[in-house]
Image 1 (cartoon, rainbow, N blue to C red):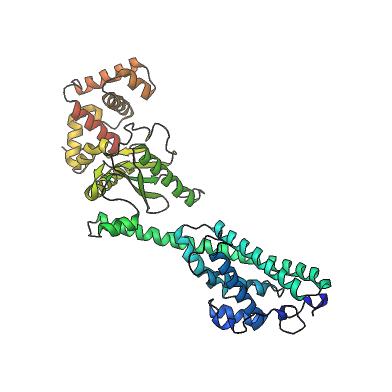
Image 2 (tube, helix red, strand yellow):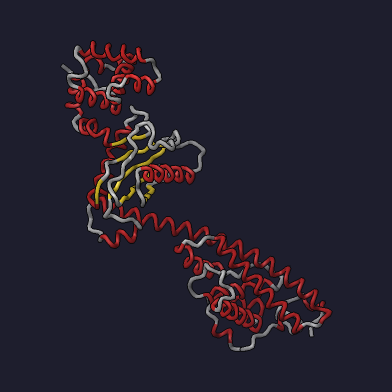
Length: 450
């Protein structure tokens, strides 16, 4: 039997305790299910017998899991024997005192993690599995010590085994966490790219197959939709974390769509500073908040975020049309003349249509507003007051509250604007409102040559 002094040294010689680990079935190493390169490396480092003992330990743990003994190991959905065997081979290598993980272990762990990540399994669950394995494997080693080592050597043997195995499992946990991060990032990037490609095909009018599209997007295309585009106006030179910016966009889009009554959400990032989104609702059209200064009565956008909204639409045609309208509202928002934060196509539709013919729009604005169309601070002040006056259906108190000015100031500015136009806003209210909104969004039209 080995003595306490023979607990160290190379694993191969008969005098080494590690060299005394032997499987019950001497041929078991030939039926290992792990990567052959990993098996070969373990045999080279600990010997064929010790590697075979590890393979049998992996099989025993697989049987315990299948019988409910290790039911908490939730993250290995396929080939549990391969998982336990790979960990057991790595663990027995660590008992040599060399805690360098087998080179082939990374590929083996990567294969296993790739099976777990698409099912939403987190790294925490993976690490829990390593901890459960550690406890079970150490218990098997202690049982072997009590059966194979003399009483005076058992305490030292268990201490060395525990210390070496702890170091090995720490290295294994670090590798597991790293692989989860790498695989998850790649999988998310691939899934996001596939979803974006599917959405672009739908928007382009391609026949993608409804069932296939619904499966790929996890979003029902047959319901009522509300499309939006969210983007950040933050300076690209800011030190802000791009990941946080993407999270802000997703959070803002989700909040707005839920406030409109949408029960399903589809988010398609098109970069770290821009997001396409749709909300689906079964029982009637989504109803976005009509307050242009706040997308929801219960929350406000961060100051650097902007959102463009389409009109609600139904089924596949409504999915496309609402997005096209959101794109038009986004272009209006990016014109830079309106501070946002919300650009609603329903409110901007007429100015957007007018802007499709810039010459005709300029003539219309000049004719309807007269001197009010001038690009001057005083005229801009009058235009803003008159536009809000019409927004609020000529409710002076509401205008005063919204612009933070006195009621008499509102009345004075409205009267001054009517004098400049030489007619009351009651006579052509729709045209005046459209012209004022056009200037608010697209700016004053360039002077036309006589």
